[in-house]
Length: 327
Image (cartoon, rainbow, N blue to C red):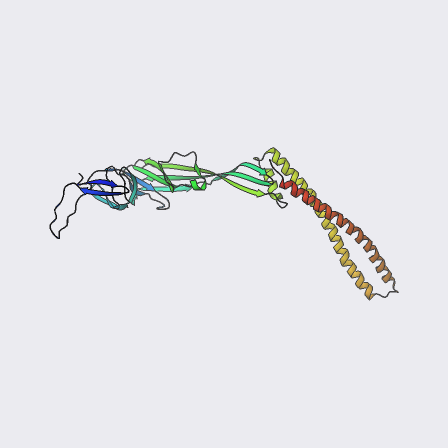
């Protein structure tokens, strides 16, 4: 029975002693405030970050006393046997608390993470920016073994990753959810084994800008089954333009190489001319060769100028095409 009446004072509360107590001078007394049975259910609480192998023995406590219960320590007995200690914060009337007080050595839980899956679900392009959406699937299977002689109600605490855009799929609705964890409830008979799988999915989005160095990415997108026919055709056209640019660039590099070789050879010939008598036959040969090379250099220089313009145009055409790809 209660020896006091609880009363709310805004956000505060007070206990009023129903029957006044007289204390002699310099004496003290321990007065019962609340003496009622309240609802409570025995549970085992598993959280891999708290105990990797065993859950904790706990209580799901509901304040059915009708009074505000002040925070403080709690001692738990099973029958007349001491079972453990815990602590509780303030509990409002009809409020529930989940408390743990000891390690449940009779129950073992083994969590196994699945391999996970990633599947591309869509590919979109807007003005040369390709956005890829990938569905990421993750699974965790909890295998629980009840080695005790009594049935267990197991609460599995699984991280709540809603803020990471994960959502539960193909999974039983949790008994409780908090900003930190989902709590899934399993009933396991004595000596029994049960497995429970939590499956989660989220959409991952990545973007890439198509530039004149992105041909490997373009070939990768073209190879995907998820790409639309229209976008695939545009990317193939982009690869053709890249091929035309590459051909022009290779031809220009070849001309540049020839000009460089002529420059080296002419330096050698001029050095030989300085060291060769002018009246010798070899001197005349060197002069003719130098003259012939000058003509070839003039032709190569003209060709180089045209190829530079062609290479610039091919690159710009490719860049402009990439920058405007959309589907």
